[in-house]
Length: 612
Ligand code: F6R
Image (cartoon, rainbow, N blue to C red):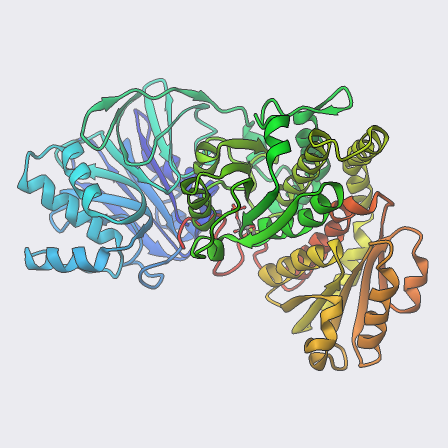
């Protein structure tokens, strides 16, 4: 949560900071601030509650703020309410140290009390102010060297952080430190940049360094030096970012979410093509060998939110194609379970950002137990990508809208290919079936495109949901997993209360909530389970529910029960999730904009959850 940006060079810093923060606003948007220094002059700090546009108006888009070195922050509140006082940057009282921070300092209370005893006063409720004053304390107490002061503070601080710090005695320089929160450093001719995420600096440079855990960096104009926690200089490789800047822009769509929904055919195709050549799945880039896949008996899929829902779908696919046992776990639960993992297992963590704190912790727990790990990750160079033994990169490109769509779809298709490869490596699938399933996977992009062509029907139906307060999603098997995702999409961006139930569970409690006008959205694609789900639809309908169904083309008999039926193209049953989720994404989008909400930035949420 929170986005940070820093710049030092020869051009005016504030417009660069505001521009970068705009690309990071998906990470947090309850307050924002910048600190900019003009040569030897005092640093100017401007911060305010509200979205970035408030800060942009206060500074004439940064043009009113002089100086060529600065740091900026867009906040998602953890410690202390959203307010100007709690907004970053935070400074020591004499302005010696000024910093922005992303992450959580767990022992901030204890450090704060120690600093109060040493004479420090605190003005905000944030943990960041504690970090600033701790650095200031060590700076003054010891050598007055920034690297050393930061390193001493890092040893005292528990938790996660990406910190950008400016020191009064070092104009034109920015110091950065990182532990478990994302941060990249970009370099161009005479200019240096730092940011929480690539889109913030992509306009200016593609040459980036990934700063590691417990490392520090010093940014000067066009030069970066890295240090370890012992203040020794270390070397880091420079990486070239391949994303084009346009993929981080709206590209003519009204919202990022709609753009990203429409990008799905392409990014699914890219993800398939990354591992499929000559009609075969090749896992060289994932570096998981056939021998390793043969030895595995148990699969754990661990993730949060929508990525967890991908796991829920994949368990059916993997279990149908192989003899593997699959358990799907919420990362926030998995990390604290006292569970001895099966020795012959693999832990698959799924994450768009590659930075989700709980998923990262689950990955580390698995590694500690000596279990093989695989990350299905979108962001190259992210913490999970770096720490997992094997990585399958989804090629969704930058996903800006807080509610995931295209990353979800690429994770799902990556999972299908993984399941297929497991089946092949373990000799559990016949050649003809393998070919047929791969051919089916290859039809997904074009079928998704066809669903998107018919979006006006869904837009029309979405009007019926604008005034409802409760909704239910039901389904069986893969349809249940898709219902879970549809339900999350709807609640997170339209603020309509929504629950997903395995249709067979209705009678065990939830049916008592059905009354006149309750919306029930039913996903009905799984051959063999259709009649059973229809019975559940009839049961809720007879109690007054308004029923909508998403089903496969040809199942026209559903119109006898459902008030509105949305058809998706026919596809092998195991892969229907990739298609049936699309109308549900569109439905949520249209309900949200119909209610006038900020669909790309739903309240209380942030794109990457780098805190617990
Ligand atoms: C919902 C959504 C979240 C994420 C979850 C995991 O639309 O986007 O539920 O799926 O926060 O995030 P990643 O995939 O970055 O680990």
